[in-house]
Each structure stands twice: as C-alpha cells, then as structure tokens.
Image 1 (cartoon, rainbow, N blue to C red):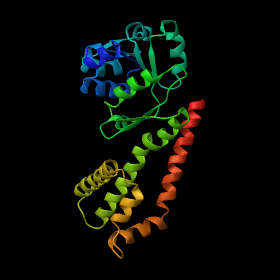
Image 2 (cartoon, helix red, strand yellow):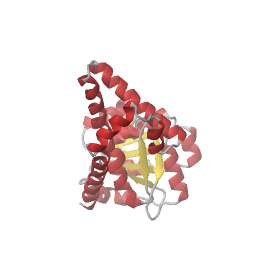
Image 3 (cartoon, rainbow, N blue to C red):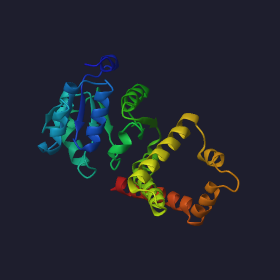
Image 4 (tube, rainbow, N blue to C red):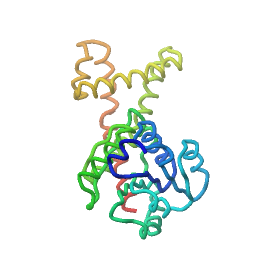
Length: 256
C-alpha cells in the first residue's frame, strides 16, 4: 500500500459505480501515488465500465456490499436515481470506521484533470480528520476546496457546466479568427493557448480578472474596441445567466 494510505489509517479505496467520474478519481489517485491500483475495488452491475478499471490494474466486483466489506474509504459514483436503492443495499455493511463520499452528479471528466476544480462538503458525522484526508486525496486529481453544502450546486453550475461554456466561447473566438482569414487548426490552437495562458496568470498572480483585463487594454487600442462589442452583445450578463440556470437545474435534480 502506498505510504499515504498507511499513514492515514485506511487500507483500500472502493468505488460503488464505475463510470467516467469514478474512473477519473481512481486514475488520479493511482497516478499521484496515493493508492496502489491493486488496492482499488470498483463495483458495477455489468462489465462495460469495469473493464476500464481492470485495465488500470484495479480489482472489480458485481457486488456493491463487497466494496463496503473490503474498503474503509468508499466513493459512491452511481447515477442519482440509482443511489437511494444502492444505499439501502449496502447499509448493513456500513460501520463507524467507514468514510463515505458521494460524488456530485453532472461533473464532467475534464473537471478532474490537471486544470480542474472540485469542491467538497462535510456530512454531519465527518470531522476535520476526514475532511483533511479527502481533500489531500482529491487534490491528486485537481484543485479541491471545502465549501458549505449549499454551494455544491453552485460549483456544478460554475465548474461542471462551465467547461461547456468555456468551450463555446473558445469556439466562437476561433471562428472569429477564421472569419478574418486564419486557418481553422491554427485558430483553435491559438485560442486554446490564450485561454490556458490567461488562466495561469489569474491563478499564479491571484489577480481579479478585471485587473488583468485593464492591464491589457491600451487606450484607443484593439482590445478596448473588441470589448465594446462584447458589452453590446451582453456577454457578461449572458454568462452570469448561464451559471444561474445551470445552478438552478442542479438544485432541481438534487431535490428529485
């Protein structure tokens, strides 16, 4: 077992549900050396998703309770409508030693990659030890912040859905360059690099986006002319409304 696992007191990591979300977390933990592949156990009703875990060297099973019997740290990564029945099924196997983690539905695989971001919220019985442990593990997959439970749906609307929003904006920027005569492949590469560079500056310097925007706006220059058009099109108001709509939908799905 990896050193981090030995020091933390848990022995094996389990996944109830073996979809893309579970796969991404498992892959991140294994690649970061947080756990060894043979000490990961995933369950699913069919082999369709389990084959990807086997390819990583993980153990698999069709029994959800077996994951609870074998692992003290368990991620529940099933579809939302399946989760209640799964919880009833595994309840007899749960002990006070278990750390159980429910993975928010709707968060895409890309949010768990190197440039991704996640949030976590504690349940009533989770203390500081469990929070520190989970945060240290999930940081192997990307940025991880602890927030109140009420903000989890906001994160889904911002980060989970935001991947699609950023891609739509990236596509639009590139198509603007294509319209002006730049080859498509080049336009998309430069757009992606521009987004990446901007994100790195904001993260590394801790700047507010408004400050960076001001820094690159020369009076009477090209950027301020372009920003004027974006303001006329309602870019900021539309982006704010998109996050609001996605958050409201996440809350609606949570209630269901």
